[in-house]
Image (cartoon, rainbow, N blue to C red; front, side, top):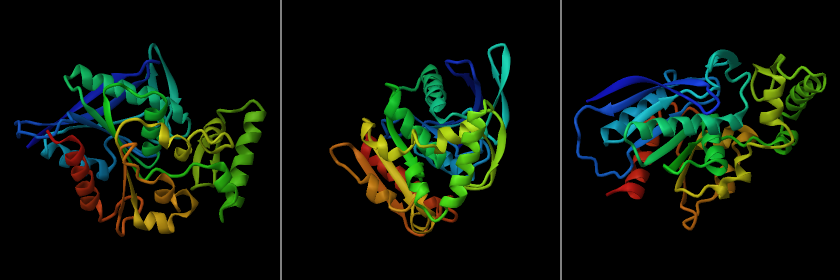
Length: 290
């Protein structure tokens, strides 16, 4: 049996974030050396909206690992964040992905104040890109492992050569024109990778030629043990964002990097959440058994 507590923290730049901490009411004698796991949502979601994260949290608590489902400042499509004495527009339409370093480290610091010392970070979809980026660029010393679930390839060069290049180039061109005109915060309806409202600055940052968030560029910079997971169906049918990603990342015993592909699973692990959970728990047992 477990209990869920609504919690809150603030980042170094004073953005307030909310989450839900789930812990076991009774000590079940966990043999894991991992104290807690932070769970990050995908693009435009939030800490309470993902059934996949809810299922993962419940499974982690059953083996004695506290589960913290969190918002990043990119939660929902558009939202308002309290920042010190003021407010700012945030959400998936406005976020700069690199700011996830501030968000993740704030949540790790929060868990440390709650007595946790050995902490993992798991993210799904864009959340997986965020955890990779944070661990490669601003790793927190208390983070012992990272589990990126279905991180997409965010590569301008790959998108230019893809079957959807027309939609991509149209959206990128529109965003770049707005930025050049001094209107980076203007929202426009991007058509790639799916129709959504996004600010010009956000689009160029995420999908532009700088390729800041192409995980293949910094996967080797992550020093802690890592488990990458993909769905078989998303790899085979998800387009250039996922095609060939398992082969490109490659397991590495020397780097502590493992990789699993869930048979038949799509990007959201529809009907395959139990298989994903089994893979995650088995890996944690292998890496962190007492």
